Image (tube, rainbow, N blue to C red; front, side, top):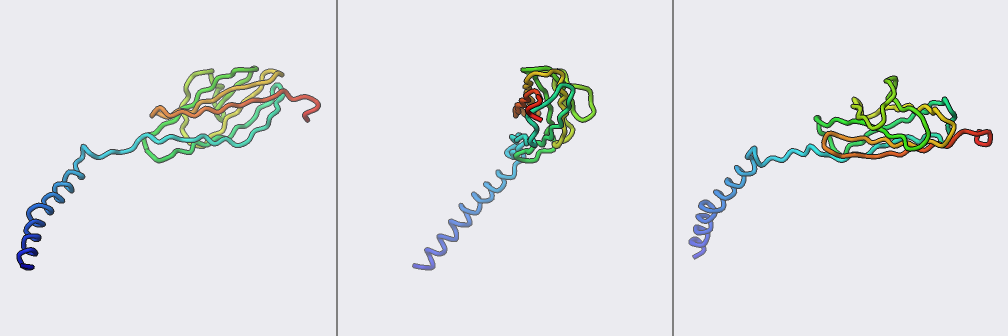
Length: 150
């Protein structure tokens, strides 16, 4: 009796379970079912900057994009908008940005330079975007430099 049960189990295993396992293995290897993740949210890390600025003064802003994963085809861009005061923002030694225009970023670590052109409080936002639609906004606010803040 034991022999018959073992034989039936082996027969069931050979005729049903092995073919199902092979079919599942083949299906899992089909090219159409492969999913490659290309969309990774990211964070923007900004080193601390001073709170006060004088007219004509330039402040360096060090930034780093920290992606949640790695995809070779990801590209990043930056744009900015000044909501208060007057100033100019540029990337390294490039010309100043035009507000709300997009500029490509070639590196994940970069330095921005903001130059004050007024003696009042100043505020601007930068948006970092990738080609997958992810965005991060960073706000900067500077108060005018006065005798009491030196």
